[in-house]
Figure 1 (tube, rainbow, N blue to C red):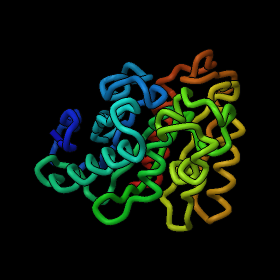
Figure 2 (cartoon, one colour; figure 1 turned 120 degrees about the horizontal axis):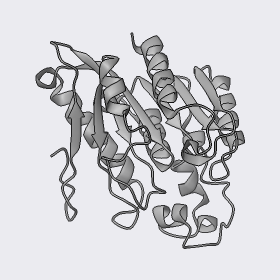
Figure 3 (cartoon, one colour; figure 1 turned 90 degrees about the vertical axis):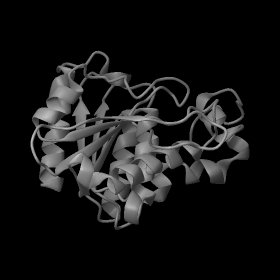
Figure 4 (cartoon, rainbow, N blue to C red; figure 1 turned 180 degrees about the horizontal axis):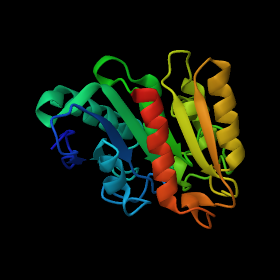
Length: 246
């Protein structure tokens, strides 16, 4: 049990650690689902843990409260709590407190990215991988719709919450000391357009932050229709982490 937010269910994480003494770098997996569905046990690549552990990474599957349980920033607080807990117990868990990375997919990408961009001290993150994560909630369509998922996340229509939407957006939390990013994004994504990843990468680079972009040709959201097997994208993510963490 990682966190016990008052009035809510306890939050857990599952930790997969390679054999050996370590300390191993740790990758926090932050699931997607439009902030409304999903759980820490769901992965895009069915062999995700197997591949990452084989590459020498501990993987922590993180729980966070969904949007109908609590509005933002509860989700970011939950990821911060997981990072803090892991770092506090790092020695016993055989993980390296100086090498923490997050991999967020879809809605989990927004949460992971903002956690990484705002984390300091015991919540600091050293590397970020985003799989088709939204970068800017303040420019979405249907600004007056109170029932679209981002509006539910933020507690009401986006048109009435522009400043709050910017606060919750990775795009508006960029700073020169941000950790390096890898954006893996389908070129045919209609849920979170590829152009959004390109714009986010340009904004990061403009602040002097490393941001690599891996376009997945022909892929939609969740890499549907991708011309490559999803395992190769897991391996590419590990290659990036090897480069920036080791």
